[in-house]
Amino acid sequence: HKIRSKITLIVGGASAIISIISSVTIVWVIFRSKDGLSKATRRILTAMSITDIIFSLSFVDFGAASPKEYERSIWNAHGTEESRFAFGVMYAFGIICGPYYSASLNVHYLVAFKYTKKTSRRVEPFLHLVPVLTGVSATIIYILSEIVDDYKCTAGLPTILSAVLLFGVPITIVFMALGMMYWTIRTQAKRMSKYGVGSLRESAQFTEEVNSEKNDKSTLSQASGRSSISSRLSGIRKKKRKARPAPNMLTSYNQ
Image 1 (cartoon, rainbow, N blue to C red):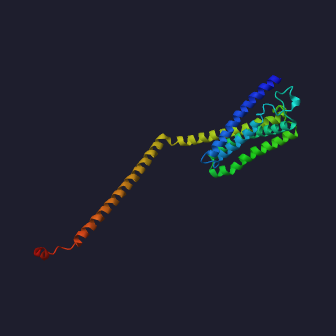
Image 2 (cartoon, one colour; image 1 turned 135 degrees about the horizontal axis):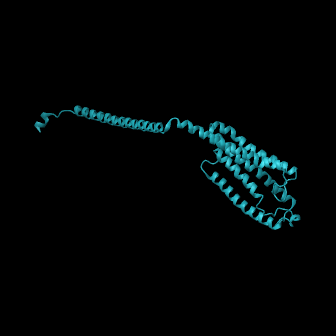
Image 3 (cartoon, rainbow, N blue to C red; image 1 turned 180 degrees about the horizontal axis):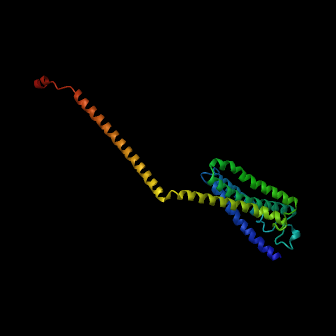
């Protein structure tokens, strides 16, 4: 049993370190980008990455946070009840909040694809509120029920509660969002198929003709402007020539 615990903790700790590095990289790239947190997708991805960091931190101890009393069954147990409690809370919050943020991301894409930006802005606060409240509420329930244990697993959870919270609700939301997106795309494709590809080509040719006509008009206007300017200059030159005084013939003869 201790050998199995050792393998599980080592694999889990190594995976947690990789996950933390990946999530920190995502957050760093988002904050370093030009847009930053100006878009809803970036805000949801940032919150989801932070949730993953919290969840992964509960595994980086490699079992060291577990109390010494469990060293016979848990490998590398050198902690106390307080450390077990802290790492257990991070685990309980992250394992619930993470899947709900994944569902929120799918819902956001559905709303942004099917509806307007104004609707997407109204829905976004709920896409953050539901995962956070679900994670906090589930963590409080787990703590009061003494379910957060040294093994950091959901084996002590009620079967129905764990199935509904961890898998049932988030997976149902994800599949519903993907299904609605697929149905929307299929409906739009059917509507577009009624017009045919030829109409799209004709519209493209019409657009090119309009653009060419605009270019021709602009070229003609530029040419007419240039010709008018040159005619004005020639008229001014003629007036100057007419205004010049005639030479005095007597003066030139006497000289």
